[in-house]
Image 1 (cartoon, protein in one colour):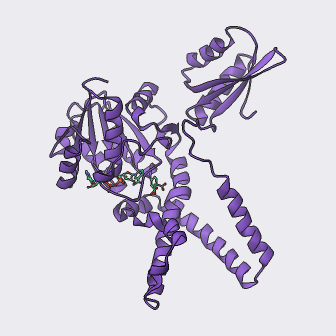
Image 2 (cartoon, helix red, strand yellow; image 1 turned 90 degrees about the vertical axis):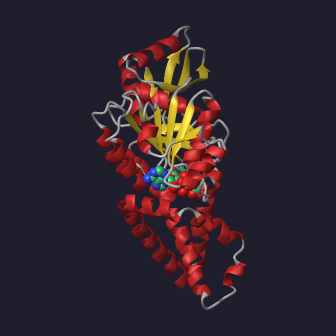
Image 3 (cartoon, helix red, strand yellow; image 1 turned 180 degrees about the vertical axis):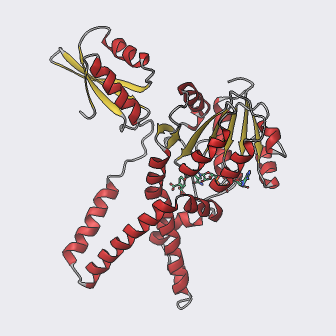
Length: 368
Ligand SMILES: NC(=O)c1ccc[n+]([C@@H]2O[C@H](COP(=O)([O-])OP(=O)(O)OC[C@H]3O[C@@H](n4cnc5c(N)ncnc54)[C@H](O)[C@@H]3O)[C@@H](O)[C@H]2O)c1
Ligand SMILES: O=C(O)C(=O)C[C@]1(C(=O)O)C=C[C@@H](O)C=C1
């Protein structure tokens, strides 16, 4: 993408890391940046994270092909409202990196009628560090990168966005904003709340036991690392994902009551079982494998062992405008039938593929 213009708004850890990853793959594009903090802007330029900075968002968006919103999520809402009053290139793609999606995607409707395409995004990796000094081109390598395009979003624009972000080496996956917020609430936002509350508990008790924190060793440090992250970023996330977090808090309170009961009754078998099943689940968490392809949108298709069968299957899907992210021949059974494993970007794509392959007399199923 030669001589194209990228504009990053919010040059902290994530905005800076995305800018570096884009430059790695698209050396000829020009990356402009804006941040409300002048020191971040100057630092971004001197570290080579951006090519140039602008002192107003309005100047940066002029002729920009790709606009990335990388401020805390409540600020991102404000930026979206401002963007609606500026001149934007009609072919521009606008995306964000916010940790919540429903409120942002809803707010992005202010851009309707400007011809631009907004695609919500969330790279699911980061750190407790903040600021452009901590930015790294490889921050998102092998992480999931969730995209939340709206129903009518042109597929070409989604592909173009993924091409822009190729240098992140992340694994793109699509889902609805509400599914995103539910998932992120459980595995990211709620644990953050718990980490902060554990720190508060120690800080309170330390008032009576002044040396307490000196004894905080590996366990406490491991479980509370994330409490050192940006308070502004997390305040915004909690406010955006309020309903889901309140419901998770109620579930957690029930869980704690249950544990309290086990301890009160000193039910040794139940306590053992509690830790045992937690250990089994934790030990089975997927390992971040290099190049691993997520398998949750896979479809299996029985195919006759015949030349041309793969192009027939892909042709049927392409006629319906369904794109495949991966295709693999798994086995040949008795030289008559083989199994194709097709991977899709979303469960909607997979369901549509299942229907149209069935209409063409292919036997397709979701798990083998
Ligand atoms: N830190 C993570 O682990 C992580 C991971 C994925 C996504 N995110 C999301 O990425 C976004 C940025 O987080 P970060 O970790 O880079 O934080 P950060 O604090 O490192 O950077 C945020 C930057 O945005 C700037 N900013 C604030 N308001 C602005 C505005 N109105 N216009 C322009 N710039 C503005 C700040 O000055 C700061 O430099 C957040 O929405 C967050 O939810 C964070
Ligand atoms: O590794 C960390 O420090 C993080 O907290 C990263 C983390 C998370 O995994 O919860 C934090 C928020 C983001 O939206 C995505 C990633």
